[in-house]
Each structure stands twice: as structure tokens, then as C-alpha cells.
Amino acid sequence: MKKSLVLALVAMSFSGAAMANADLAKSKNCLTCHSVENKVVGPGFKEVAKKYASDKTAEAKLVQKVLKGGSGAWGAVPMPANAQVSEAEAKTLVKWVLSLK
Image (tube, rainbow, N blue to C red; front, side, top):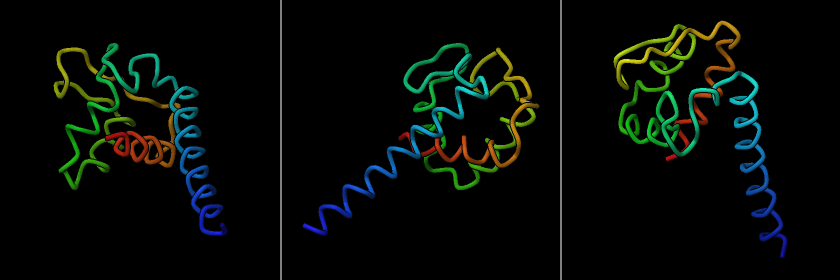
């Protein structure tokens, strides 16, 4: 019985973290151009996670892309720089996106 309680608490903590990071994405306006599942203006976050799944340098690259913007990786529409996002927030967001496989 104790083991199932521990497992339930661990599951709740992961879902809480996932929700917190989705809330962070919303508060930083990421969801204006992206969704978790589908392309909006930019790619869906699950598509990003899939593309970078085997890239060990993906986290660092994507943090910089969030902060500084970029173009060409997903088509002609550039991603603008996000001055309202701190480096720590960018790392949190990127880790969350990469976990959505």
C-alpha cells in the first residue's frame, strides 16, 4: 500500500510539472505560434521533440533559439527573439518541449 501511494505522488509531481511548464509556455506567449500537438505558425512541440530526439546538443541549441530567435529550420517564417523569456525560463521550456516525445 505504501508503494502505491509513493507511485501516485510521483505521478502527480510529474503531471504538476508538465502543467506548470505548459502554463509557463502560455504566460510567455509561446502558444501564440505553437501548440503541443499541431503546427500553428511554428511547429507543434511534439514535432520539435521528435526532430531533436537523438541530438545531444538540442537543449543548448533550442535555448538559444528561444532567446535569440531563428529561421530556416521549419520553413520560411522566422521565430522572433523572446526578450520576455529569461535563460532559466528558456531552459525550463526547452526541457519540457523535449520531454513531449
